[in-house]
Structure formats: C-alpha cells, structure tokens
Image (spheres, rainbow, N blue to C red):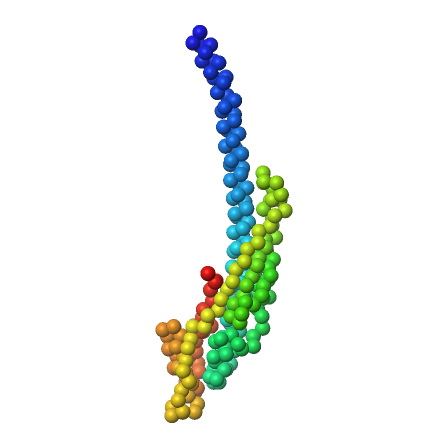
Length: 197
C-alpha cells in the first residue's frame, strides 16, 4: 500500500517539476534578451564616446597648431585658448571613428570647445523572446569638452617690446624666448580633452 502511495506522489511531482524548469528556462531567455539589449546599448555608448573624443582631439590639435604659428603674436593667444579662433569643424573625425565602431552618428559643435555626438548602432538587438526587438537599434549620446590648461599675463613694457608672456599650464611654466622657440608645449600641454559628466 505504501509503495502505491509513493508512486502516486512521484507522479504528482512531475508536472510541478516541468513547470518549475519551464519557468526557469523562460527566465533565462528573458535575462539573455536583456543582456543582448545591454550589450548593444554598450556598443552605442562606446561609439558615441569615441566619436565625440575624436572630434574634440582633432580640434585640440588644430588649436595647438594655430597657437604654434601665432606664438610670436601673444595678442591672439586668448582667442585661441577660448576657442574663438577660426578652426574648421572636426565632425568628420566623429563620422570616421563611428564607422570603425559599426555605428552612424550625428555630430554638432556644442559651443566653441565641445562636440555633442549621438550614435546609433548599425547592428540590431537581434531575435529574442521579446517581440519587436529584431529591428531595434541602440542610440546613445556623448559630449566631449576641450579645456584650455594654460594662462598667461602680458609682459609690461619695461621687459622689452619683443618679450613673450610666461605660459603657465597647470603647474608647468614655459618661459618663451622669441629667439629660441624650439622647446614649446605639446597639444596635450595646452588643452585637456575629456567627456562631459
């Protein structure tokens, strides 16, 4: 009699076991879908960050080159450090780098010393158990900022008409001699490039 009862109990547990396993499998598939979406979103954010930084770095290099050609004209320095100097938009670098990251971007200057980029992945999330995700792409944005690292004070008239200002770049000073302009700051000494918070 007890053997018959045991077999009957085992038969009743089987549907519960199937239900629990099916639920766990469904939960695992849902986590997989969320993981796919998160990975695609992460790819979009990486593309946006890289594209924004690429555009800002290109502009930093353009400004640094402009400063080097104007080093003997200190009256123009402040405009260069403020981003008011005429340099072309570097959004082409954002598009170039986004293509390497399998994404497309829209890029626009965000003030004189920043770039805002919106990136969309070329790949979709793909087939998941969530209907409608097979055609979904991820879109993320990023803003890269260029900060001048240097300050200077114009020399007084008694120092000499051809004297150049001392350039102070966050702890490093550059005494510029108009007769010996070989040791000059690099672009990274003049400007800092970073993603906006």
